[in-house]
Length: 123
Image 1 (tube, rainbow, N blue to C red):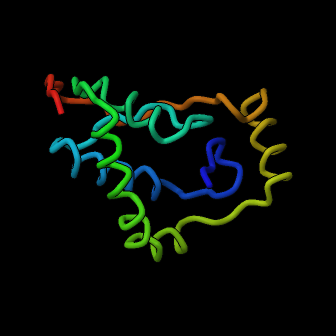
Image 2: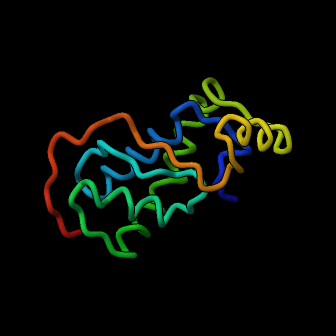
Image 3: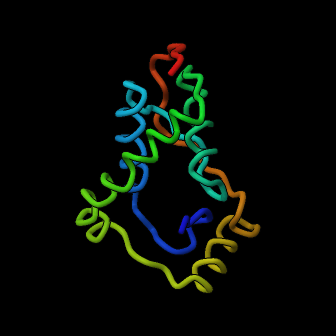
């Protein structure tokens, strides 16, 4: 199950940290900017995240990334329990909708971390 509109779990950045770790494992470069992730599945988030890093990605690269994710999530389970929490879906959807002024899917927030170096890398 993917929580594509962040209506089930608040990870308090643990999810972004896991994504960044797996991104670096696959590309060899630290993630300094992550694409908007609300309302998008992982393959799209990964593809869009590679672009500002100057990385041209292909499906097999995402599949390698996806292989790292479950283990990394398990390794971070304690951190997720400590920092994150589950949401009540009906309440969370209404609450998120009121904060962003529209239904929760499609809401996009950019990472505050700037990319310092951009290199073109074919992986």
